[in-house]
Length: 113
Length: 110
Image (cartoon, rainbow over all chains, first blue to last red; front, side):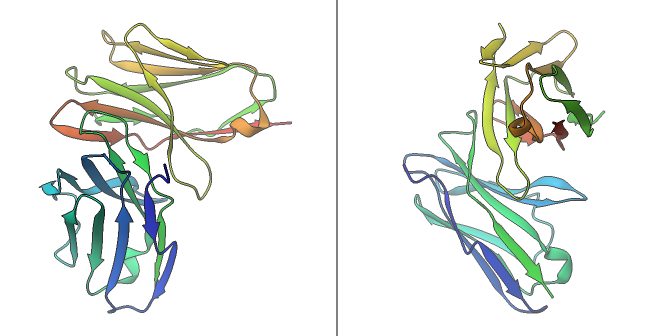
């Protein structure tokens, strides 16, 4: 199994630009999570899906953030417009269901200048 | 009380030492517990699940104390390669997915 695949691995963008992060979960996993990690705040859960349906997006910091899961094998996290304080590592993770351990992608390191 | 609380460390130990970390959790209904390991600039990876009866995997032993609401991780005969951040993870089944602690940093020194 290829594991959770995220793209791009690194993204540098200018303030105000739209940024789209992509994730392919492990085949057969029903739950998908988007996390953000910074030195100051640690690992924060932004949003999660179960069977492609968003369950809880209360961790999304602002309306500038949105996430979709159009099918079982693909999800996107979009930031529009991006700001320097959005700079962080964004991880996607998937699990069999909400009760089981999650497996993480390698992350997207986002820098907004 | 924070949902999942860990001593951030760093724990600096010599090679061969035994080191233990504790992690406290706030919700007595929590049902699943895990330890993850995260290397610098890498993603978190599952180290081991924590069962009610405790479990052991080589040099690593994980234990659960429901009465006092904490889990522990014991590492025996520390190796340089054990240097990482260890994340305590708690899952309140069916309601809140994995809640991560902020991690405990371990540095094993030659």
